[in-house]
Amino acid sequence: MSSETAAATSVSTHILDTSVGRPAEGVALTLSVRSGSGGAWTAHGAGKTDADGRCKDLPALPEGTTHVRLDFAVEEYFVSNKHCIQQAEEQQDAPRVRDSGAFFPEVAITFAVKPGEHYHVPLLLNPFGYSVYRGS
Image 1: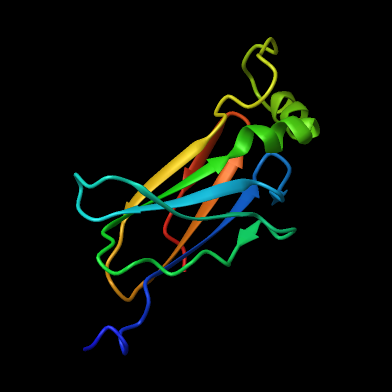
Image 2: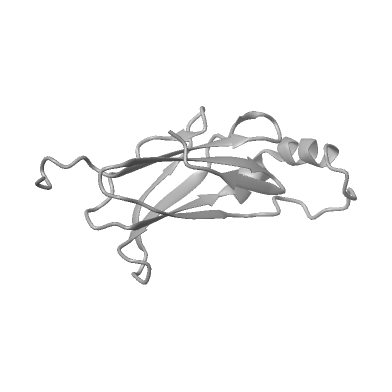
């Protein structure tokens, strides 16, 4: 199959703030790519999550990409949404004395890709933890 007829390899993501059960709007993220596990990372795209917590307009990946990294700048989101931290702290059994802000100021997710596939990577986020998975 020629590169003209091959389907593009693509990435999308969304963030759900599980501390409030709502999408995380306005989280800045960057998309970086590399070829081979020892290759250098190259910035390839950037965006912010929309009101639905989604970032759908990331560029297709360059041919030869084997690994992708999504870097989410979550600290700014939590600083501007302090109610999320307060609500999460109220749900914790741990001592209430904490630093202000999110425990994780950024989240970096690295994953392998194969040509022609679409990768949707949801981030489930709260001020004290996160999880990710390959969505559909």
